[in-house]
Amino acid sequence: MMNLSVDKPYKCEYCQTKFMKEKTLFVHVCEQKRRALAKTERHVQVGYDAFNRFFQKTQKFNGTKTYDEFARSPYYNAFVKFGSFVNNVNPLYPDRFIDYVVTSGAKLDHWCRDELYDKYVLDLIKTETVETALQRSVTHMLKWAEENSAEWNHYFLYVSLNRATFDVRDGKVSPWLLLNCDSGRNMLSKFSDEQLNTVAQQIDPPFWVNKFKKYPSDVELVKQVVKESKL
Image (cartoon, rainbow, N blue to C red; front, side, top):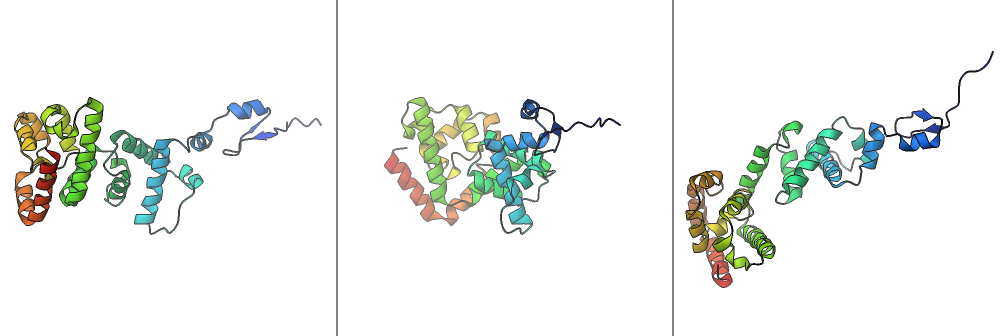
C-alpha cells in the first residue's frame, strides 16, 4: 500500500506548524511569531517591564520573567496596550507611574484610563518635594522656550493659555511655582472659567494655602528661585 503521508521538513518554532517549503515558513506569521518579532518595539518593552513589575510587587516574585513567558501570557495584549498608553501619554516619571498603576489595585483593563493617570498626577504634585517640583517646572519651561525661540523665564508671560492649562493639569508646571510667582498668578487670572475648571484640582487653593503655611522655608526657596531667575 502506498504511503500517502508527506514529510514536511520545515517547522515553525513558535506554533510547531510544518511546511513543505522554506519560503512558506519564512512568510508564515502565527501569533507567537508576531509577538517574538515585536520584542524590540518600545510599547512592547514598556508592557514587558510592567508585566515584570506586576509580579515583583504584587506577587512577591523574586527575579525577572522571560520575554517568552510574557509572550505566552494570556495578559500579553493587555500589557502591550498599557505600554502604548504610556508611550502616548508620556507620563511624568514613567517608571514611577508604572509602579503606581501596578500597586493601585485597579483592574488591568482600567490601567489605560485617563482618570487613573490624573489621580497619579494629583498624588504626585501634592506629595513631591519642592526641589523636584521646581526642577521639573523649569525643565519644562526650558523645553517650551526651545520650541518657541523664547526665553524660558518668559513662560508665564507668553505661553498660550491653552497650553498652560494642560501643562498645569498634567503637572508639568507645579503649583509650587505657579502660585508663588507674580507672573504665574497673573497668567492664572487670565484663564477662562473653563480653563480654571480644568485645573481646579491641581491648584486647589485650600490645600496649597495650608501647604505653604506648613512649609514656609520651601516657599522662601521658591521665591528665591523666582527672584534670581527674573520670573
